Amino acid sequence: MRSVCVAWNEFLVSGPRYWLAVNLRTPPEVLQITLKRAEQAPLCVYSTTSKERRARDEPPCNEDDTILAGSMAYVRTIRSDHRGFLPLWKKLLQSSMTSLETLDLTAIGDWASMDSEHVAGWLSDSLPVVRDVTARGWQPLANATWLENLRSLSLCRPMRVETNMLRMLGQCSNLSSLRIEADGTAWDEESESMESPPKIALPHLRKLELEFDVLQDVRHLVRSLDIPPHTQGSLRIIYSPHSEEFVEDLAHFIFPDGTASKPPTNPLLEIHSPPENPEPATYTAGNRSIKFGIPERTEEWDLFSNIIVVLQNRLHNPPLTVQLDRPTEREPTTLRRLGNLNVQKIHVKDPETHLDKILAAIGSRHEDLPSGTVPDGHNWPFESLREFVIEQADLSLSQLARLVGIRQRYLRTSSKEWLKRITLVACNLRGLSLPKATQQLDAIGVALVADDRCRHPFNK
Image (cartoon, rainbow, N blue to C red; front, side):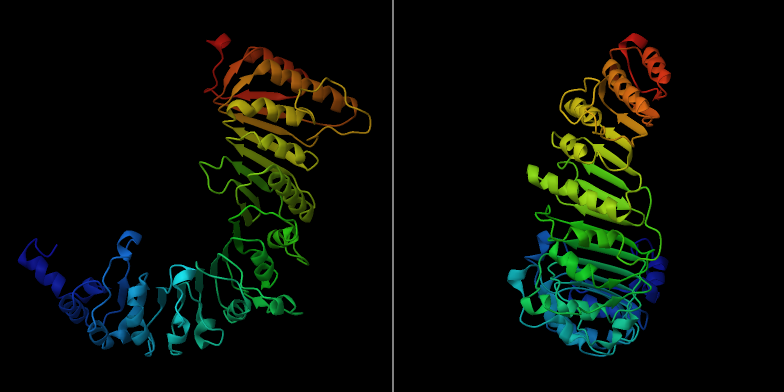
């Protein structure tokens, strides 16, 4: 822009607000000119780069700290993701930084490169206005006086949940946003035996994001948190659970023990095909959600089903919506295990070749379609189902009408209600014509609705 004309050049050079962003990767002479033109305006000092460049970038020049020293009182934001700049930050952060509001600093990139010195020890205790901290590979000391000023805190990988972290979080009483990524646990036997783990009261917290590798970290952190019921919370478990030991802790995250308010209603269970979605299963209830890792073996899917049962029981089994997006061969089995829950809506999208098994899971406890008789003393699965949505599927209307008809007659004979509505979205239909299927289902109390994207060879 400075090359447009002389007037533009003079305008930009004379305006301090156009020189607030200070890139430490520039040559010392350029850095010096930038700071001079910024005068006493609030500065954003940064040294960020892509992962591809980070490994081969040169460390800062020795005179950079001397050049910056006179301007540190005006620095409002620091962002750095390069370990090569840590010696520079060590010198500068030990001074009083009365204007610093945002600190985004990477100490290490993995556990193998951990330094013996901790970044937290470099920070001056004179950070009176700091509000936002992002710490990658380090965490503030629990006795830092500025913790109570924080409004936003992100603790990013590599990071471990341990007692000092809980004590530190307990001092952040004014946080409104908290994010923690943990790729391991540092919990030892002494910590496990503690009768009263540190309590973390965060009365102003509005947003909580947790990402853990293992369920063990869920217990240590979630059980210590005391946050408002309205806090928006998400919990992601990277690896598929292998044990039911910590399942109750997941339920505590969704709806804590001893909560005076009413449990959330109308939870949603979404199951996606793993190749297109790294978070294949998400359970959402009110303002809390849990994202699960990819179950691979049958026993992992069984455990996942049991977790959903526990979560539903914690909420007193409210009406549940189940959404299957491009289901694999395992989802029908998982769906069948949820048959006794209060599932009131099932939405199946792009089931490819698995729709028949999903229909069988709804219509019978066996892979084959029901024969029309059910042994005495046994309930049909999904008696609570009221709405069934099928999207982007090849569907036989004859099979659908038969399945629904058998169930509907049985449930009505038993004085029970069942399906009220079937919605078809962008489906390729075969078998009965759409008007004929609509008439048959309407006769047994089921409304069949198909959008204008559905296609049937008889309806051309």
